[in-house]
Image (cartoon, rainbow over all chains, first blue to last red; front, side, top):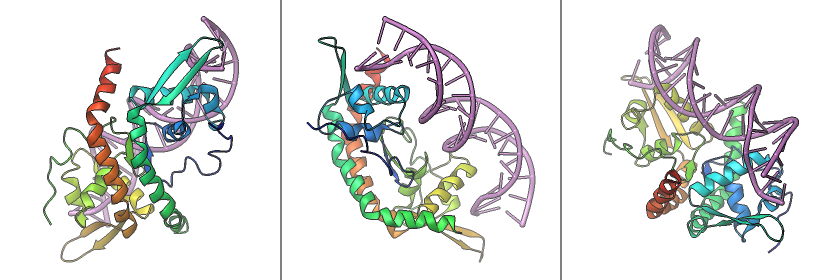
Length: 121
Length: 121
DNA sequence: CAGAATCCACCGAGATACTG
DNA sequence: CAGTATCTCGGTGGATTCTG
């Protein structure tokens, strides 16, 4: 599994232009995206989510856990490690999420146009 | 086109249990649902959305309009009427929305269980 | 009828600093 | 390493009252 890139969410995410939201809070969708390829450690998640403070990231992870979408596993040896992973329930969300993302990609220009027309009005 | 029922969204909507959200604000998804079958007047929308104050409903409608998802048309005769309608862009969202709603319906019990397990912990 | 104006409470989110 | 503890601030959503 490849490491997550630091610029994974630069520029566009999260944008208010996107009319779809997943999870309870602002960063939930990005966390889910990070976990698509497999389990990740807290510090691994912090790389692409470097604009999120640890407090807020923890909050988001707790919410996802409370909703049964991710699981949290703690190891003490050889060093302290906490691993987050999509549950089967969380993984089953990926289908509708992909449908929504495809729609957004297809209509991004229209969304942009609508917002820009509003500004110049 | 049938009138919208007053109990259309009673009981469950909007629930924090649902991990999908459409539009920018709390009520956007319900407005879209109301417009699925065709154009509706402001006062028609107020029937199923009776728990939403007119100010907040107007806000939500304005947001949807700014995002190009609905259109607003005003008539003065014979009486004042303002009609809201899904744009083609808004209508094209219905596909992914249905996918998300189907997922939620399929996994509602699991979502409920996860939240309840959290409470008793 | 279709809102606008005003005021207010809450909560999500961020900054900063600290810890088992 | 993986978080907590405070504090703060702004924005969303709601109650109430008023209007072209």
